[in-house]
Length: 301
Image 1 (cartoon, rainbow, N blue to C red):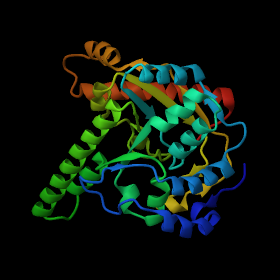
Image 2 (tube, rainbow, N blue to C red; image 1 turned 90 degrees about the horizontal axis):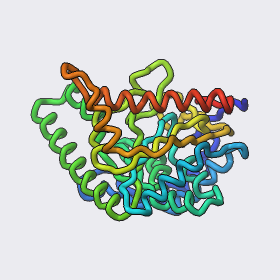
Image 3 (cartoon, one colour; image 1 turned 30 degrees about the horizontal axis):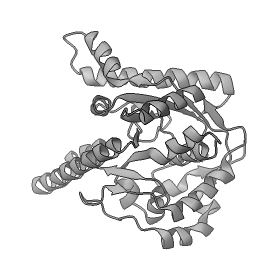
Image 4 (tube, rainbow, N blue to C red; image 1 turned 30 degrees about the vertical axis):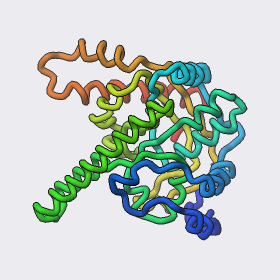
């Protein structure tokens, strides 16, 4: 396998154009949580993906993608849960959908709205420019809220930040509701962060994913084997970029209400956190599919 090159070295020549084309807000507030795709920055992002996506990259479970698309077109509110290994997960997925030659997959790409954390907008201008290439609803993540409580801020500052988080997430929920009623599909990374090897907590599904499932009709779970960006540290521009075979595999679409109802009926009465137990079950499905594709394709993350 080709040794990776840090993103900021391999593609530094495109940073000036990204900065010029960027229009997304550098600070998130309740008025700008919905951020439509910037097609100028997307053209640059797609070149990065194209350069590093090997020809053997493909979809597994194509019939499941098509079935999910048909359900959405029939009026069901669609939700995609996807594994998360790198900041290239969404760009790679969108690229392969658009280049598939399958009209259903191409239109599915047009409908996807990703849920994204504020950090992608606020931490670095170049990261912001890359991420604004895709339509998003921005939220104040749970993990960021937890850091507030453990910070050195005064009680007044903590209260102010918590109020800010509540307002942003309320606006995000309204935006998401508008999207789904408009026939768009919401895509969420249920772990809420990229998986960091040696840190299994970064692969555990967040408890609030239960709320997402309750709000939608049909769930498509998509596993990822292979990535063109390898996480190194907290600086996203240090991610190692290298050509890779990327396989996206979809499980059969799940009826959200029936799945949750059936699972919850089996939860012991003395269970301390049924919602987390439910989401843990969701993530087990990811693990099983990821391992299946690893064995079949010889591809991993």
